[in-house]
Length: 362
Image 1 (tube, rainbow, N blue to C red):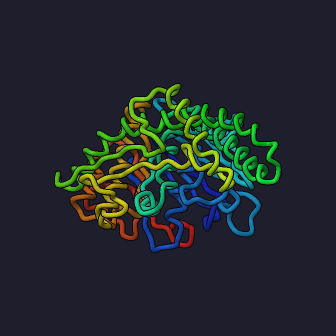
Image 2 (image 1 turned 90 degrees about the vertical axis):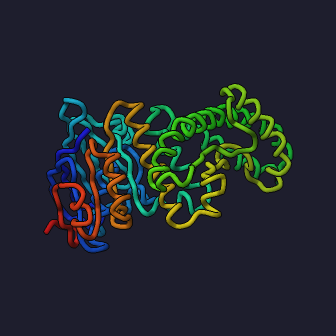
Image 3 (image 1 turned 45 degrees about the vertical axis):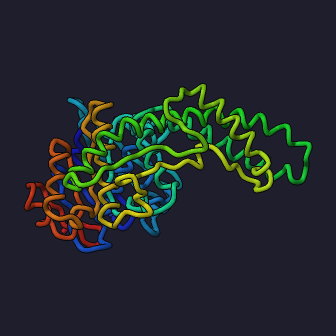
């Protein structure tokens, strides 16, 4: 998989730019000039939302009505082109054919993004860790995004009902309907998450061991209201129904659903201790890098495609040995690296450089 070129119009602070890419692409310049915007534009072609957590309409250049992104890329031996038109939402076209949803572009383009923003995966609460697992699964499983939507719709309906029950007790019996819906889709989510982490762990351990020079061991598992290990979907569904029933009084009192995969967490342990609570800054950064490199390796294994590697302001914060370790893991992939000084990366690997200033190319 390789992107040959990109055209960007009215995206973030970029008015208009065209770039032709090679295998290693280094985007450098001062802070707040548009380097991350280029990485973000490329990432949107995976069908995912912005990794910076903003709404689509916020991606459009200030004062403009829409943004337009175009790429030319190779997938296998086939040359293709894709386009994104961004207004209040994204509209996608692949080889001249309009797609029902921009998320469908993810079937053609796979990428793994590394950014300092992902440190929140370890530092913050469980939302970011669930987001990591769900985002990876959406690239691997074409139906997983739909299962998430189905679950979230049922969850919203159940929470609305919980608020109404406090005013009208006759609605109580309707909870069973939404419990069934939640348990049905929730069991699939729990099963897929658990299986993914099980497959991810060996890769993550190998990378973390390399980054820590064999001094520390990483462990991962899903945490919920019951032990998910070695359970099939049907067994999880039954246990989830029991859990919803057990929490029903609390749910009515709190007017919110207090159990289910939307409350689960991915435990990240270093030598048996919580990386969030006890890990140093360096250890937490190594955890994120290990998880992201493991995600890329697993993506390559399961899709038989080399994913794009998008490294946003990460390499300059690492010593040379860690830079070398990471680049050796992605040496056969197309790489996009942002940094303030191109020489920090060019010492290790030759590549094409682009100096960005004020959203334009110098």
